[in-house]
Amino acid sequence: MKKLIIIVLSIVTYSCEEPIDLRLNTSEPQLVIDASINWVKGSSGNIQEIKLSLTAPYYDLNTPPANNASVIIYNTNNEVYNFIEDGTSGVYRNNNFIPIINAHYTLEIIYNGEVYSATEILKSVSPIEYVEQKNDGGFSGTETELKAYYTDPENVENYYLFEFQNNFTALPSLEVYKDEFTDGNQIFGFYTEEDLTTGDEVIIRNIGISKAYYNYMFILLQQNSEEGGGPFETTPATVRGNCVNETNSNNFPFGFFRLSEVDELIYTVE
Image (cartoon, rainbow, N blue to C red; front, side):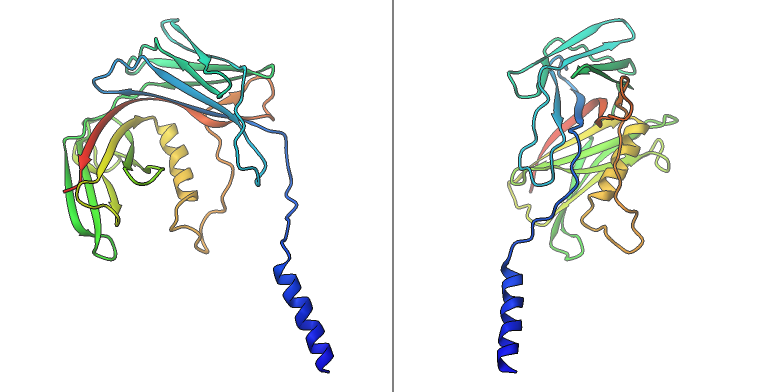
């Protein structure tokens, strides 16, 4: 009996230590389009870039760039802007872009013999008026809260993306807002962080976005929320943006073509 117990324990111990290599389904790489045209208030907005990459298997650590694509943007005035790749980075740049509020722009990409396109309007944004700080916020009562106030234009449907980037984390905090119940009123973008201390800098950006982009980001942020995962949460699904493959609809791209006016403020924590 003792021998049997030892054998069973040995099998269990060995099984726990042996790595498990899951065989996941793989598919052909698909194009990922990161085309966010940002016109920061007070700047010319001439220098813009678009990043193209490819989807990769789950265990791959690197995202391969999409090289040798033809990338152009043109507007309703028939002004054409060519984006040239920087080496083999998959980053395509243009230094002569002219942003025009409420103008229609079309993105056209030719990659591997297929044509991808998207059309959007360059949206304006309200300026950040001031920032209010609270040091005893959050559930614990020890988090630093920031409220960036702005005034929403009256009788105009507006959508906003707020971005908060501190000086010690790599990724910004993102929130989307709509003026359905705040039209014409003063309102704020909200940010909380327990590790903020006096002297830390937070870059705050208020970004004007379209309704389509608001809906796109709302779903993405819900799926990536650290507070999600409850029993009644929607099952995560592939979120498709406004870019389409005109040559082969089955080989659809990921990403979104967005054009926005941006108001930027650097706040020093008190």
